[in-house]
Structure formats: C-alpha cells, structure tokens
Image (cartoon, rainbow, N blue to C red; front, side, top):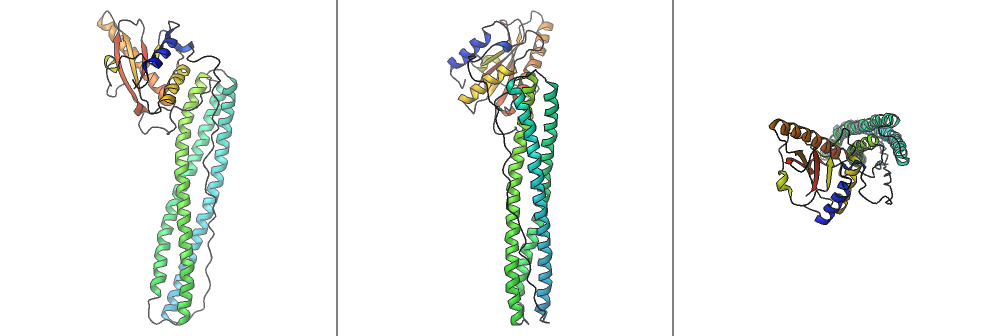
Amino acid sequence: MALKTTHAAALCAVLLAGGCSFAEDTLFPTSAPAPQAEVGAPPMLGSSSFEAPGVTNGVATGTFVGHKVTGLRSDLTQLQGMLSRHNQSLQAIRTDTVQDSQRFHGTIAAINARLQVGTTPGNPILNQQWNASQGELDRINEDVLKMTRLANEVTNSSALAAYLLESVRAARQLSGAVDEDHRQLRILEDETNRTVVLVERLLTELSDDINRQQAYVANERQNLNMLAVAIKNGQLYSSALSGRGPSAMAPMSYDAPMGAPRAAVGSDAPLVTIRFDRPNVSYESALYTAVKSAMDRRPGASFDVVAVSPAGSTPGGAALGQSSARRNAEQVVRSLTQMGLPASRIRVSQSASASTQTGEVQVFVR
C-alpha cells in the first residue's frame, strides 16, 4: 500500500467501530471545521481590440506597375474590412462569454451557499438550480464554439494577408515603374505588414482564449458532477478529488478487465469498508472524506475497489452474493468518478470472504 499501515488501520478502525456500514460513522473529530466552498472564477479573456490601420490613397500613374498598385490597394482594403469584422465578432463573443459566466457562477454560488448552511438531501430547489447551471455552462461552451469558428475564419485571413504581403514585395521587382509607383509600394508594404501583424496577434490571442475556455468548461463540468453528489447528500464538499479535469476515459465498468484478486491486493487494512447491510446505504460523504485525506497525503495515489461477497453455502447463494457485490462496487466506482477521481486511477476486483455475512466494498490505496 502507498500509505503507511498505521494510517489505514486507524481509518479502518474508526469506520468499523459501530459494527455496521459506516454511513453514520465519523472519520475525523467532530471539532474539525466544515469544508468551505471554493470560489471559482472564469479565466481572464484577452482585452485587445484589433482596429485596422487604414489604407493610404494614391494617385494613378498610368503605368503597368501603377495598375498593379491599385489592385493591391483594393485587396488590402478588403483584408482590413475582414479584420474589422473579425474584431467586432470577437468583442461580441467576449461580451456574451462574460455575461454567461457571471450567470453560471451566480447560480453555483447560490447552490453552494444553500449547501453551506445545510439542507435536505436531494433538495428539489437545488436540483432545479443545478439544471439551470448546466444549461448556463452549455451556453459558455457554445461561446467557445463560436470562438473556434472565428479562429478558422481568422486563419484564412492570415493566409490571405501573408500572400498579399508577398505580392506587394514582388511588385517592387517589376520593370516599367516610375518613382511614384515605388513610393506608393513602400507605403502599401508598410500598411500591409502592420495588417499582417494585427491578424497574427488576433489569431494568437483568440487561440489563447479558446484553450483557456475549453479547459475551464471541462473543469466546471467535473465540478458540476461533484455538485450533483453534494446535492444528493445535502452536504457541501470542499473540492473535486482531482484538479486535473475529467478523465478522458469513460467511468470504469465492472465488465472491464479485473485487477488483482483480493488476496493479492496486499495485507494492509482497507482505507474504507462499506457494509451494504441495508437498502440505500448513505456512504458518499465518508467515502469522500477518506479518499480526499489519502490524496492530500499522496496526490498521485490510485485506488483498488474490491467487491467482497459472503462465501455462500450453495453455488446459487454464492452467485447471488457475487452479483450483489458487483452492483455495489459499480455504485462506489460511479461515486468516485463523480467526485472527480479519474477512472484511470481506479482498479476493480472481486473476492469472497467467510468473515462477512453481507456484501461489502473495500477501498485500498495503492
């Protein structure tokens, strides 16, 4: 085991002292302060405004190069018009994102405040607010999708700007130009170059906004899952079990390849033992506290969830016990993933024991 035997044994002794499932048992002294709600905040968006520098008018010289300059000047005017539209779209998306984020965090703050002072498990008002917050987060995600679409448009404009700059520079090598043509080309090159810089800055800042917002939305979705567990139990939890956002893996099912059998897990006592000796065992608060404490000591810890079934006297009774233990273990795994623990850090297995009369689930640290 990753943690010392003494820590695991102490926790186990506290959990099992009552001789029943640990739903009502206290893991730590009652004088410990209650967990405080984390005050989340959306990431800062870029604040730059990308105003086109404008295009200087020129007089017609009547030369071939002069006609080329006129066409390039028209192209630059169109490019700067695209830049202005991109800038307007960006500022509008940022405004919408800020407003949507404020509404989302206002709803989350109201839920946390209600949980902070205490409420009933499964409070319908909090469930309604949770549903509203999920819709608000969906709107923030839609804002991110708008940013992504805008980034694609800006990428096209960036390619056009680079091509236009090369065309302006190439025009200076053409024969048949007068001094006025070259003077206008120098001005046009300078203005095109400044436009290219603005387009690149817009694309860079927009990409940074997208990356931050995508990570923010993913993390808040994980926090919403955690909040749903808190509402279900009517108790506020301090934070998700992992600050790295949701795992890319789906929650592990019991049909996945089994880990080590119970006998090979280790000789240490389990961190948590959940006895399913009656319907609707309320175990999530104590499970969260124990796992959070273990991860505070060892942030990289992983966990073995072991379904322990009674050793039945008949094959039929043993099969029923194993099936019930599987369902209980699946329930515990779902609870852990909803609390923010990545499924990649959970391994499940099954065993039978003659010392237990009812099914139980044991959680080990590894």
